[in-house]
Every structure is written in C-alpha cells, then in structure tokens.
Image (tube, rainbow, N blue to C red; front, top):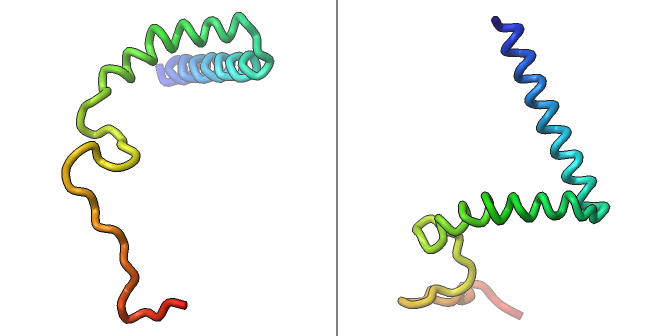
Length: 83
C-alpha cells in the first residue's frame, strides 16, 4: 500500500515538474500555444480568484491612505547633531 502511494506521488511530482518546464520554456521562447494556454488559465482561474479578494481586509496597500489622518513625518532627533 505504501509503495503504491509513493508511486502515485512520484508520478504527480514528475507531471507537475514537466508542466512547469514546458511552461517556462514555452514562455521564454514566446510559443503562441503556451502563451494562449497560460492566458486561458489566468483568465479562467487566476483573475477570478484575485478579484474575489479585491477590496477586502488583509490586502496590501501601497502609498498614502485614501482618507483619515496621515502619519507624522520623521523628524531628526534633537540631541543628534546634523551637519
């Protein structure tokens, strides 16, 4: 039983590795077949997953907040001499 599970895991890992290699080489060589397949995957799976969490708590915000108080600017330490 353990041997069968190990064989299945090895086959899955090798299949994923083969897909990753074909994807990487296809993207680098600008293969239209690979690029179309990647675009279909991202439009069908990736974009909806990303949009599902858009605008919710836990997102990464870059830049100043849209509203509310702004952080105070960093001021030099009064005990430190600046030249």
